[in-house]
Image (cartoon, rainbow, N blue to C red; front, side, top):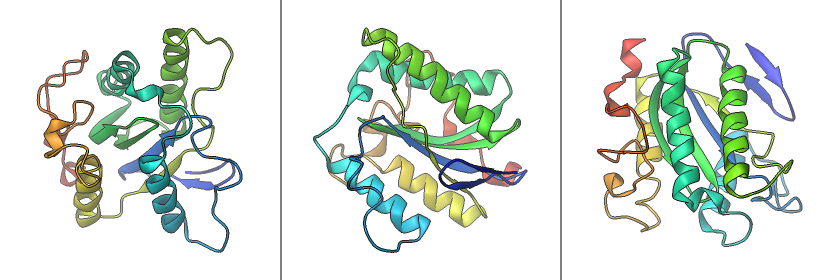
Length: 196
């Protein structure tokens, strides 16, 4: 399936999807995309590094209640049979996740962003304000080696900048053993790309 907003989004059947979405206002309009010609992968790396290092813009996902809503929503989609859940991490201003869609991927992303935006805005006592940026980054995973590389990237996302020592030290990550935000008791790492 191929869909468009500003970027083309390809969602081939039977493939894992690596998706990233971020808070509205977390990337300044004048700086993204950066000037010059970049591949989609290079633009993603620039965006992710900027989001990881900025102290500007909204950081709502640092609120435990909001991060918990995102975790609950991720696992709710699994319970509903919408997708299998792979590695995920919630950062201060963005989310990384790998999903194996069982329904249309755009519908999954719309639902995840919609329910978490409504609940996040409710917690922040905001009405009618954008929570997430409309555009998401997504990439379909080609093979087991790429799945393993992206899984390491997601689960080590807080380790590399020195925010935690081990992946499991970050509470809002699939690497964290015993995440208790109402999530299912199974580790996301139990799901393998080879199963599909």
